[in-house]
Image (tube, rainbow, N blue to C red; front, side, top):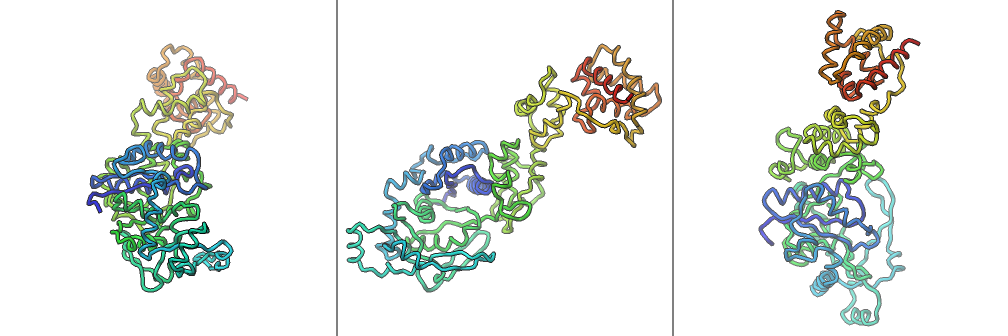
Length: 489
């Protein structure tokens, strides 16, 4: 096996990329890049029943969007192709390797029909108390003579090729996180390697492809730990060096259940559509199971490459906390270059604002206040029209305001703003400061009623004077007059 670290991401084109699959791809990428190795993309499309049209493009789009650039793949053949399983199958590689195992006595042809297989079913209770049916094959066809096998093959009887696992002793493999794991061989079923339609099973194709592509580290979810002895048995049957296994912890929702599509944020594309930044998603997913030695939480991809050490991956499940992801996304938005931010924010602003306002100023107001881009709309909708509100909003204990005091302030400020020509934030603020000084009150005593009048909201992305600058003189005066009328009733 090559000394150079080679990892592979081998997704099946079955739909959007689940957060767990993206984490697997990310960790494989980081493991390879941390030591200058190669990250390979391989498409496993032999399960035709689950194949989804357009899903391969989703894989490419997701990897490109997250910056996980593969060194080899269907579009970058470096001598280990084809990199699509259905194309590899056309070369005969899987059947050829299965026959190699048959010759060695490590596999055999099985001609049992469905009726016989049904008769082998038995009910078991799983770890969660659920009763399910499984089929444990009894090696019936393993005892056929060569002549009997040839006769059945020549007769065109449908067959599968099964792994011939020993029934005594143990199979042991090393997981980089969980250590040495041993399983009694008596517990290993003779799994199918080649199906009756000629397609390889997922497990068998995986092992053959990983060996032929010189993969050094196999990274996958820990739900595959129970299958790993069968993988290990195949490596031993072929006489191949096995790769290093790294089984990742489960990702759960806030209720500690497996993260499902029902959560609404189980896939990368779900999150992008909800206004999350790709960089923030990658950063957050990197921390779902791994933590650096220090307390750093915000990482660029380059920083992750430098710091990532798979030996620090946790074994316990990781909770996907959408609140924490939103916080992190907000930190990324705050740090964004304004031009890039404005380009991304503009479509959301235009969903709400139809009037001829300075949209850049509005965008700048909310930049440090949002966590995801759709949040923009609820922050700025008052620019389009003042919402209905109760006059009790003018009451504020800290500012010592009330509907009565607010009415007085607005009536006194109205002529000041009517005479004002310069409607910039600085000029409006200067007039407010003069008013406060002459009245002998605190800023908030005037600012609170004014901001309420022009926005109709308790919380706004900017202060009263910033809002009035965007609204302009005519709209600002109209809103102040409407507030006076509302308070006068």
